[in-house]
Image (cartoon, rainbow, N blue to C red):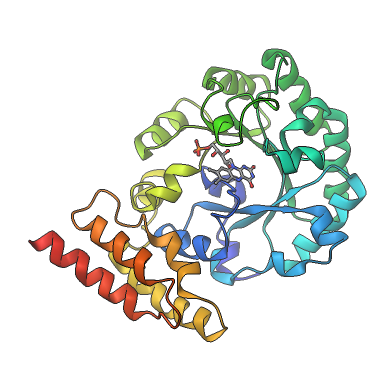
Length: 336
Ligand SMILES: Cc1cc2nc3c(=O)[nH]c(=O)nc-3n(C[C@H](O)[C@H](O)[C@H](O)COP(=O)(O)O)c2cc1C
């Protein structure tokens, strides 16, 4: 275990986390986020247990040492397969294994993963028990408050009780229902109303459980308020991706009472050696810089930065000079 890792207690790190987001929170994105915050817990995109266990797609587990503390999110509903996938995640070096019980996308529903599992607390509990027995890393759950016509006040406590009995000590609750018919995954992140009070009621009902709240949180001040109200952790998705400077740069000082990570300018420069290594491995510039577009959101010149990166980073042979030129363009704009 690295020195870096030993410094982190996951229940502490989970005071603030960046949500798992398919196609967004890949290893390049996580590398950037880690430069901005040394303490925030980071989640992978969802990786399905069948892809790992039946498909042997172990490359999906690749990540960098610098990313710790980092949690692997798994999708699946077969306890034995999830146990095998959790073991692979542990062997790959992840600090936590998280089970997705909140994602409503069609593909995920057809495989009986994600939010539809809110209907099967016993199966989720069995899966968690199998994952816990299979390996030593902490197993956590990310869920919704319910799906479709379920009554959240009834199903959520039953769901949490089942997973707690299975040995889960930490959960993240996306504080809205998922409507499995008729709404797109995107609509399911905005349309069903948020119910933070229910999440707080769950914290009271299950004081032993570490509860993180998720959904619609877009400012560090809100994180501070929610923590002060007694929740154990706050998970942020879209705002952390689109405006990582606003969420992550102040997080170490304001949420963890620690020295901060890098500011956006320093982080952009610190990405250069990482990008060089990625290009030397045969990767393309755009794969990394697409996650850097929001780095200067709200700052003068941010549009020039974004435009230059998006226009030039996809070209064949594009290298780190594009990032330096975009920084220069932004500064020029800001000075004008
Ligand atoms: C592009 C995108 C992809 C997502 N992929 C996942 C996923 O793989 N697993 C998951 O549990 N949630 C996923 N989510 C949901 C987020 O983790 C989070 O619960 C949701 O966006 C609400 O938080 P927010 O309002 O802070 O964005 C995704 C969200 C977005 C925007």
